[in-house]
Image: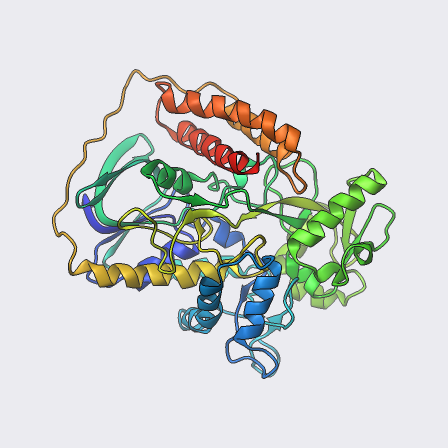
Length: 484
């Protein structure tokens, strides 16, 4: 493998892979994948991708923009929201051209489903595993590109800004290697593992946000954390299986511990209110009834339809002893998504020269205070392509040589003490869940500061445990700092 690349992309989800596809073929690109290539938040996305593409006359980009703004509490960046909804058609068509198998109706038209916060059926989907289908087809394409190298199971340990771009320190197994590049794209996903319970994959520890913060990039609105109202509530596993928004879109009811619908007491949109509204309603109802027992029930629908529409959810629930076609499914809010992140402009460029960020780790402002369902994959596609186009436009005038930075490591450094990550998760779960606890947040922030100081100043072995613990401490610090 080469030591020098035009572009290094940290992350192999939708944003990272799409950026690699859209960069010029004459540019040499390195994609770093923290774990296995398909282990990313993108691949877990069930519902679909929202967009107005060859749509019925009753839908248009203005309606999509309005829904996005309403869900975001009108705190969205109107410029980037307009970019998102107007470039959605191009993003969806590109996926179709790559072979993404969106579901169709019997007459051959693309099937569009409805999700909370949308006023029209505009969600393109592949059963209930849209993200996996998209990542699979993007990855198949990237693997055919001769200008792209991929390193799997490779941890980013450090980044240094140089006169010609960046140097990146990596760890693959026991092997350390540094790489140089002219441009860098952070596409490292979310921060879900800073909580005790999350729908996010194991990679979601906020590494990209932490590295960008350490480089001096602006981190914005990191306290805008979205909690999905209907994660499967088995009370045992840290990674909670998501019951897609689309299940409510197809008519599922939310029930309290007494088996009664309750959303009518909180919002006129009932089960199809935006995610933050439904999550708050569940917590309020929980406090009112003194119970965390809540259920999703769609058993009144045709069983064959449910098995065909939600095959992955159906099988996963069966493995847990629940039949979607007959049973009430236990659910409860769970950390799901981050609206804030590395602040970027409408070309995904940060304040740091030649450093870009796309996907969940970035802050484009499109989501405002609360992301509209199925806008996440769309954002990743739209702004990663914009990053690639912006980089291509700068490549001709950029320096052609590479400054080589020598990373040093202390072979006598000790492993971090056990328990830092567990303590961080507990603090965040107790202090900053759906309805924050201000007193717990103030107390937790003091302890988080201590942990962060210890990890950044202590002489610890830079391995997977250290990298993720430092990232979680940094993310928790930035979230609670905004809150208090």
